Length: 359
Image 1 (cartoon, rainbow, N blue to C red):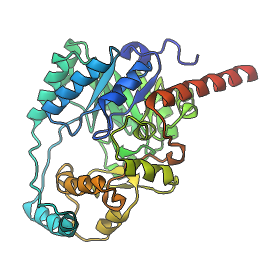
Image 2 (cartoon, rainbow, N blue to C red):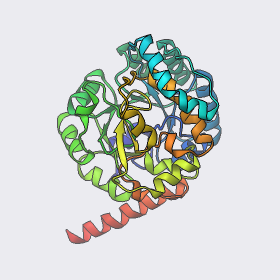
Image 3 (cartoon, one colour):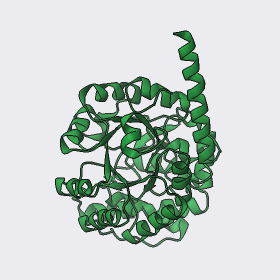
Image 4 (tube, rainbow, N blue to C red):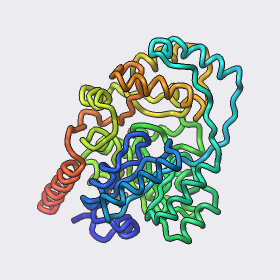
């Protein structure tokens, strides 16, 4: 098999070089455990979780699998915003709240302490792997994880970001192409300037770092996994493919919207969270993009729109929901995570056999 004895598998102690992306708000213990029990790497998407919720999630996953799994965290960012802009955005969002019977929300506390508390939990529960999005943790944090033998995975959308991750001593690097659904992992560039596709990004990052690379973005099946590895990646991270599995926490209306979508239906927007993310275009995005009111920075914008999105999701009002999705929407399947992985492996075996026959 093409992936025999590679570094991603060795460091993560997994049988298959397949990683389920840490889709914040959409993972469940059942999804993580099913992926890990299949020999791949399941990931708890803990970006928005409180420490208490993460602790319960880790405990549940550990009760469902003895295999390796990861926790994905969002690196804290300095936030600057103007209260007058918050008031303006709240005024713009008020008609949506009134229609859904919601109160005006307050901006949440976004303290570094919350991130540090989650790191302590990973160490306490001996979580074997920690992945990061939106930057690089402090050297002190990385050193602490290393002392406790926790493998670290960083996310890069450019060669420069990958080099920064390598210089910081991160064990593995996810090369996230612009095809990817959900939030962009950019941290050294303006997000509009990092729209490099997966097929172009992966080999360039592979050529410029010595750290093992994991490809991500638009990968939905065995063909995408194999193509990634032919480009030099030693693993592939899939998000949207797992988002529509039976075990995913994504709302049924979200999954159905993906199943009905075309490859031209996604857009990249900061409307929902203040940070660029790829999802299916809808009325909420179009309405707010046509307004002069400035979009607040992440995560403040996220605080203000989150109740609307959550309430809309409860009633299946897809026009007002965030519908995160990569560009490979036509390849989405209504299957279990185990079935998806089995299908990926079978496809790769068949393609590898065909390639060997052609040699």
